[in-house]
Length: 154
Image (cartoon, rainbow, N blue to C red; front, side, top):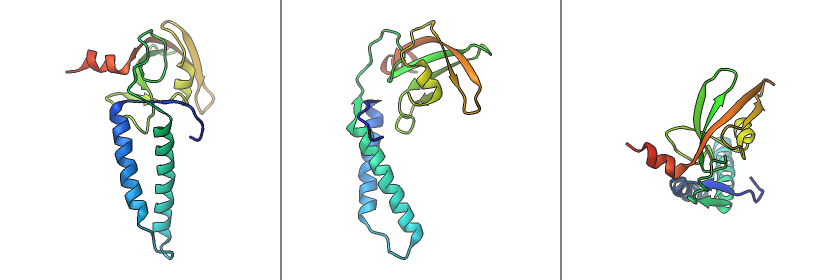
């Protein structure tokens, strides 16, 4: 992620990413022996992950609740109906690798996330699976993540 695209993160995800970044930087400070190819590969993977986390944190909107207007956008918990089957799914539109939630998480770059972003309840959209199948979905509802947490807390 090298663009300036804003990313919604919950405060918990932001904290976890900051902690992971600190840990990875500590681990990367220890250099691998030039002859150890597996250690060098691990270091390269760490550097790539550090860059990814840095980009996420640099472009993050942290915990700011999107408006409770029913429009699908990052930071919202969406409920969609798969029109061909009638099945429904509720998920968080966010950053899959950052968030820890009690539900599925889809990115706005995923086929389903990209299809429904900007939709209003009752609006039908469709997306293509990697296999080329077109799936029609209808947005049933969208609530900010913080409100969803409050409504469904035990």
